[in-house]
Image (cartoon, rainbow, N blue to C red):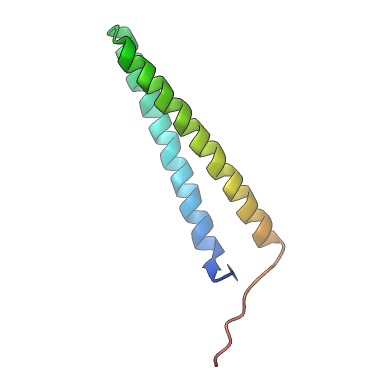
Length: 84
């Protein structure tokens, strides 16, 4: 199904994959932050904490995007392409 020329299943899959990648980044950033903290690298620990927060915010935003895409696809709106 397409809305406004956008293939929703492909778009939703792409957003979902990006969310999963974000979760992986979030996990690795937490591990790196713990390593930096154990090494008493305060500025690096702080930067990694900031990065982790931004990654979490991005994941949250993308989850809202996915919810909206699910809402749009459940409403059954579609575009029919007619040959001219």
